[in-house]
Length: 113
Image (cartoon, rainbow, N blue to C red):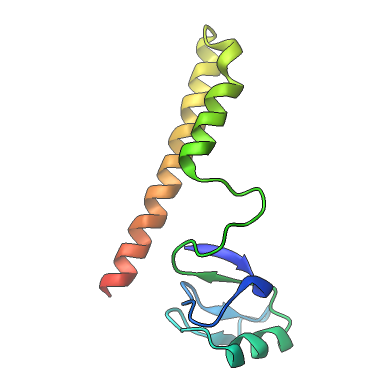
């Protein structure tokens, strides 16, 4: 599941969450396959982003989990002996891993529904 700017949405992508207006009016439901017509309609409704299934778009600055964990380890390499900072690094890594697993679990559950 990935939140992407509407300008990156392409026909064939599938919504992972309902798309709502600021006043909570549902414009399209979860599981809707986007068509150019739907994307244009969302744009006219001033929708700026949508949540889609999978991770179809590589956004600027977004890196895969493995690369993020490698960078995290590098950032903490000079303070390896500090137990507090080691604990902080471990908490950050665990949070990132949990987020990734939750995302995969949600995608699997939606695929089986």
